Each structure stands twice: as C-alpha cells, then as structure tokens.
Amino acid sequence: MMVTQEWSGRRLLVSLLLFGISFGFVEAAVVVYLRPHYAALQSSYYPERPEGDLFPLLRLEQLEAAGPMAKRLLAVELAREAATVVMLAAVGLGLGRNFRQSFAAFLVAFGLWDLCYYLFLKLLLDWPGTLLDWDLLFLLPVPWAGPVLAPVLVSVSMIWSGTLALKREAQGKPIQLGAAAWSAIIAGSSMIIASFCWDCRNLMDGGMPTNFNWPLFAAGEALGLSGFFRALWRSRAREA
Image (cartoon, rainbow, N blue to C red; front, side, top):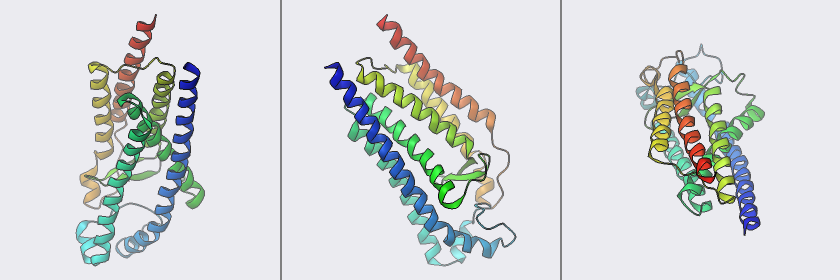
C-alpha cells in the first residue's frame, strides 16, 4: 500500500512538472504576441522610453483615446488573468484527493508555472535582463508590480512547501495545518500581495515604479513560511 501511495505521489509531481513547463511556455508565448501591440501604443505616448519597457503604464484615458480595440484588449487581458488563476486552481482540485493535497498541488503548479514563464521569456525575448528588473505581475484588482526576484522567491517557496506536503501525503504522514498555521500563512500571503500593490496608485497615474517594499515582502515571506514550519514541526512531533 505504501509503495502504491509513493508511486502515486511521484506520478502527481511529474504531472505537475509537465503542466508547469507547458503552461509557462503558453504564458510566455502570449506575452510574445501581445508585447508588440502594447509597445506600439506605448511608444505613441512615451516615445522617449526604450522599446520593450513595460512602464509607465498607459492610463485608462489614454487607452480610451486609442480606440475601442485598445480597451477590448485590456478587457481580454483581465479575463485571461482570472482564467489563469481558475485553471491553476482546477489543476489542484483535479489532482488532489483531499483539500490538503489539492492545496499543495496548487502551490506546486503555480510556482512551476511562474518560474517556467520567466525562463521562457528569457529564452524568447531575452527578458528580464536581471532579476531586479521590474515586472507587471497582475492587473486584478489593481496593478501588481515588483522586481522579478520577488515573484521568483515566492514561487520557489511555493514549490518547496507544496512538494514537501505532497511527499508526506504519499508517505501517509500528512502535514496538519491548524488555525495558527493557517492564520500565519494567510497573513503572510496578504503582506506579500500588499508589497506588490504598494505603488499601485502611482502606476495607475502613469508613474514609474519606485522602491519596492522589500521589508514588507520579507516579513510576509517569513510569516508564511513560519506557519508552514510550525505545522510541519507539530506533525512530526505527533509521529514521535
């Protein structure tokens, strides 16, 4: 029985790896198609900016002045972002046999997708130049932005914690996330999201990104990981 569970766990991880690589390429390919359209529109308002720069973002009134197609592309992009999150959640729900496994599978799928997305962007567009280049991460409900290093660190944390949780599920030693652990994970995640949205008003007004709120981001990462480590330690203590 244990051998069967471990084999099932390995198969699940391989499935998530293949999905993450494939979906990461799809996401990067979408950027390859969309970036020339956005760059052409942006250069008409900001001709002094280097080609390929994401910032400053076009303001809503600039998109409206550009015609209905520009606004339609924005609506499509917002819908695509929402569909992406739903798809990643669906992978977790489809592969997991319980909530713990589904949540862990979602973490791994999300992390792999994001990492592979940046890897393929580097291969296809030679971007980002460095891990400190700023990226526009999401547009819902407000613009999320930050140095590429920040989402990469989040993705590595998600892959590591999700993989460990799935391995322990396969071994019949699940990590039980209690109220304290969940509180820390949710609070830490909220702090990370807040760090990405910290400068959203400036970005929506057409400003350039300012200093990233690394202290808030680091505090969120530390708090979220501490919640996971607490649950892992308590689970191991019960096994002793």
